[in-house]
Image (cartoon, rainbow, N blue to C red; front, side, top):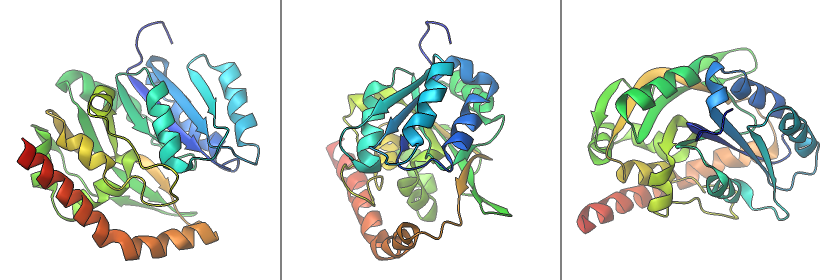
Length: 253
């Protein structure tokens, strides 16, 4: 990467991901357009070989950076650390056990540049051990304001927006200038309203029907089982929180 400002800062929170982190990093670094981006891995005090694996990539690539937490701050805290360190025009959150679709980065960069977007949303694929299923959340939409986009997508689609920060590339200045951040030191729900807040503060938002992200499924750990039960209990509360947020912002405006 040259000395010019990166177009996208990838932010990857990492905790005990040694089984998957190489696949994740390779899927990003292998993109043809990655030379104009940066990759920030925030190791949240892993106890396995995750940190050592990332350090190897940092030695090989000048635009790969490892940040080490001395205290475990959960995914929300790791993402906030990444936001503060990022110097790219845009940010894209990628989970350490997931991958991005080959060739997707170039398409995204083209959309961002040609349309001057603040937020660009896209679909994702659920990747099981032997199969995959595309989650068709978004259709191709023209550039519109954040509130108009929320109005169009309201209902089931906006629920998916709230809980999955990886389904959009975001202009960093929208996040920092409006002091939007993730809830820290909580295991679940740290991302409930983040994307919705960013979209609400944006003036140029668009989406595409293509899937650009692979969301790994099929984990059988106690953590994944707890997530399933937690989401079932908390989903209505999440909708209520996001709805109130949007209504309050509209009143203030």
